[in-house]
Length: 116
Image 1 (cartoon, one colour):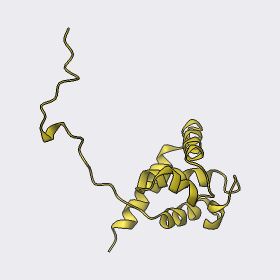
Image 2 (cartoon, one colour):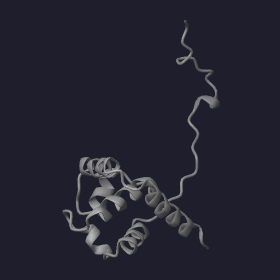
Image 3 (tube, one colour):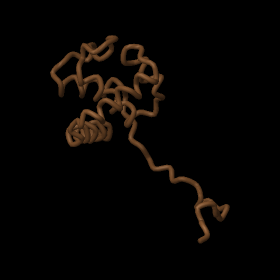
Image 4 (cartoon, rainbow, N blue to C red):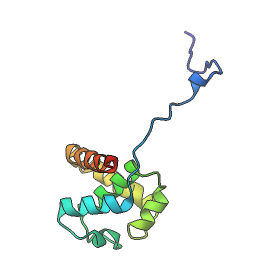
């Protein structure tokens, strides 16, 4: 049986589609997460786990909604390395965090950026 996975036409159709992504500022993410978790936004910037799960949610939303690298996001949230950002995201997924609540925060942030 022949595989067609390697076949390309050499046209524009072979390229990945660049879909528009909403871009949200880190400050807006911080404000929204802090209000949702009832903490001060400044606690998200501290090194360590003082912000609890709020920091993980903020990091995940920052990765999804900004065009920043994991290194830049980690620097913003207390000087974490890019590996630490990956680890916090993995822990968030493994904890079976309510994806619906995370999606609702994401929708709220995207909606707030579309306002005039």
